[in-house]
Amino acid sequence: MKTVYYTATSIDGFIADPKNSLDWLFQFDDVEGLEEEYPTFINRIGAAAMGSTTYRWLLDHEKLLEHPEKWSFDFPVWVFSSREQPRVQGADVRFVRWDVAQVHAEMVDAARGKDVWLIGGGDLVGQFYDAGLLDEIILTIAPVTLGSGAPLLPRRIAIPPLRLREVRSIGGIFVYLTYDVPRPH
Image 1: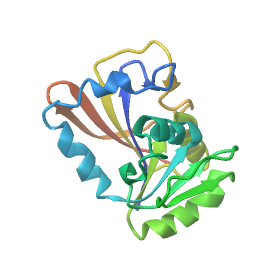
Image 2: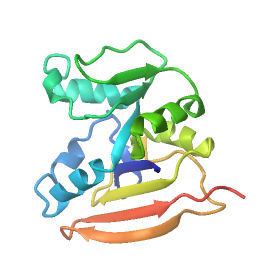
Image 3: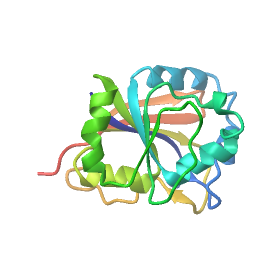
Image 4: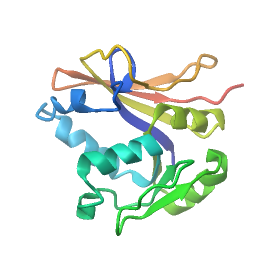
């Protein structure tokens, strides 16, 4: 069981543009080989966490309040938020305001031996890192720069550095990187 940050990023390190949009990423939907990556990854997952900005983006982009059948996760999802959030009908969404360390054990238990996916955003993932709970980072790097927006992971991770485990090209367009996250000494 691992706690994994799996995301797409621009070359300059942003996971969303200044308007929290992923439209820059959707232009690549037809890249050969990309359609196989997500299902392979999602089969590893037993629970997930996301911040409120990511959750609100999903609600708005997929119109989930009007179309709850579009909720695509068949595992429990914890949404970390300090504000009240609308609930997607029929979805196993658990709203929390606590520190990530308090919730992580519950997530691991719910995952039943599968991995926990940190969907986003970068600051929430940084909180898992700060608590020593981040095991792996998987990045799909898109061939674009955004100039600004939501940063990939707004934390200093330098000593010890991440350990590169895998590098692949997807469709001759994306770079797929997998890093192990060592524990600080």
